[in-house]
Length: 96
Image (cartoon, rainbow, N blue to C red):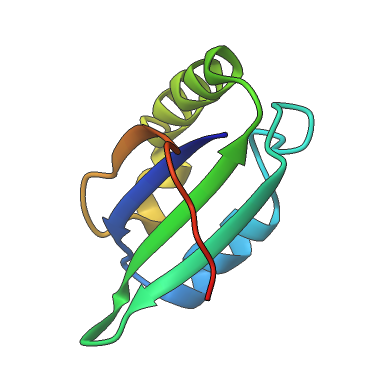
């Protein structure tokens, strides 16, 4: 499994969440199998999003689409900082 981990500040979490929920890039169509949204415990304006993919190439293509979207003025309005997106390949998992 491959995951795109995104971290950034939001200018207004509720506005950001509405934009995220509108799904402007098309997560399912882009190959996202699951996602998780978290907020920093010490700063609820800071979000962490994990987007899971079966395929690394699809994940990279989706990250490129995200980066293009982040350049749009509408996206800039809800971002409170420069998003960081990193592709992570899961190499081990264990549950207790």
